[in-house]
Length: 198
Image (cartoon, rainbow, N blue to C red; front, side):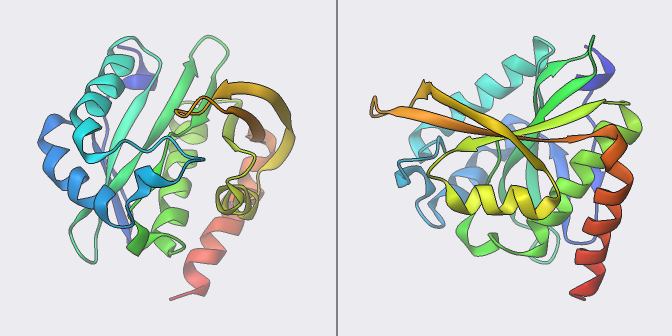
């Protein structure tokens, strides 16, 4: 296991990122039912009956050295409210991708998501010395695209017919990134958002 995939707990004021484990299964099933997130055709959120397989998949990728998976705990409620992580890890080139992330509907568009991204980015740039962090989302996932742009990420381009959705339709993938030189300004921006809403 490389430093990029070594389990770590990241703590903030609104959220706690805990190393993903099978112990999170039942709480993640409860979280995904909040908003029935798996029914959104333009996302790849696991249904309740697929949660154990998704945990197994993410932990397998961690063992393979390409993912650092987390369960997301809301500190106000102490409930597990989603999953996030760093994926497609390229330790040689110090390049990572944020995701795949999903959050229960009740905590979407709250400071929790912003703080989770701040903690992940700080870990990637400051602890792992990454040179770039990438974000990818489906073209029709407008909420996700707006959220990524609000972080300060810049759009790199669109990968046309990049992959298939579970129903077989083709997905155009929008690619964003933050590079190391931009991190100090992005960090200040995210910290300002968090303190400005207290």
